[in-house]
Every structure is written in C-alpha cells, then in structure tokens.
Amino acid sequence: MLSRGLPQGAVPKLERPGPLRERVYEALLELITTRALRPGQHLVESELAGHLGVSRQPVREALQRLNTEGWVDLRPAQGAFVHEPTEEEADQLLTVRTLLEAEAARLAAAGADETGVAALEELCAKGERAVLDDDVDGAVAANAEFHAKVMELAGNAVLSELAAQVDRRVRWYYTPVARQRGKQSWIEHRELIAAIAAGDEHGATAVMRAHTEHTRRTYHDRERP
Image (cartoon, rainbow, N blue to C red; front, side, top):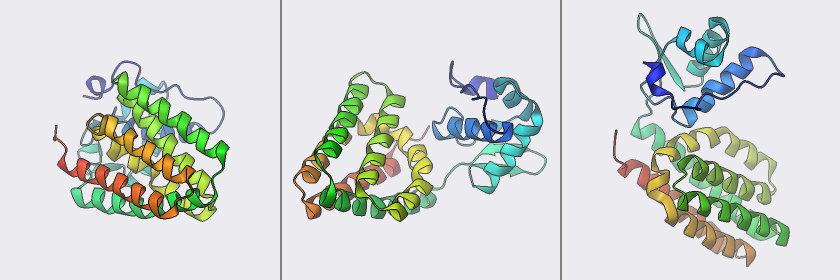
C-alpha cells in the first residue's frame, strides 16, 4: 500500500503559489525521483490525495501527465503504478548523459575562473560530508548540484537545456547506487575539479567520461530489491 511506501517526512509540503495541479505534479515527481515511491509501486489516488492534503482531481491530472512523460504506467482495470525502467532504458539515458556531461566538462575547463572552481570545491565538500554521514539523500542532492554547476560553467545554453531534460532521470537512476558509489564518486569529482582548474580540456573530458561510465556500470551491476 502507498502508506507503507512513504518514509516519515517524505511527503513534500505543497508550496502555495502556482496552480494546484502543477504543485501536485511536482510533489509526485519528486517522490518518484527520490524513490520514496518505488518503481512498480501501486499509486492509489485517494491515498495520494490524503498524503498531499488535496482532492483527487489534481492527483488524477498529475498521474495522467506523469504517464505521458513515462514516469507512471496506467493499466486498465488495475490503476496507476510507478514505471519500472528497463535496463535498456537506463543504459540509453546514461549513455546520452555521458556525451552531454563530457562536453560540459571540456567547456568548463576552457572557460572556468577561480570563482567557478571554488564553487565546485564547496559542492564537493558538501557531498563528501554527506557520504561520511551516510546521508544518501544529501549525497544525491549534492551530486546533482555539482553536475549542474559544471554544466553552468560550460556556458552553453543549448547544452544546459538538453542536460536539464535528462537530469531528473539521472537522479532516479543514481539514487539506488549512491551509497555504493559513495566516496569513490567524490574522489572522481576532485579529479575533475583539478582538470578544470588547470584548464585541461582533454583531461576534464576523460575524467567526466570515466566518471559517468562508472555510474552507468554500477547501476547495471546493482543489487536488485
């Protein structure tokens, strides 16, 4: 049941400004992305509405939108279920992520200044603390912030827009392997920062490509629940 699948404090508070259906959609997408709602889990409209403190209508609309975007499967006579990504789906997305992020690393190395490098170092320290504290959610969030900062430093708006389209799914795939990647992931981040700080475009590209490939392989080798 849904009530068993949501950890204490997992349900986000709905921010007041903006259309209700948009806020419900964002809340449900966040629960799916962080795996508070797990792949294959049955989603009952009335229970979701109760958890979010809304009526069933915006929940129904949100589920239909999530179905269109591939986050939720609507099955006739059964209801809504969190989509279970296939290995091929994950592989294709993580491969595209490698291409985008490797180019971002190259561009960041070509143009990043001391302020940008310092920002990366600060985010890396934040992630390292999360790993030490065994804070998986914190590590996942810090990882997303770090990669977003590299993309920002790349200074290419089109590249950033493309990366934003896959960012949520990258987080979705990264969450179950975040603990396993753990400290090594942040060692690789440190290597990337060094290459960017040195203006080493080739080195930054190689480090990022290897880094994202490690995550892809770890996802495929993960322990299934």
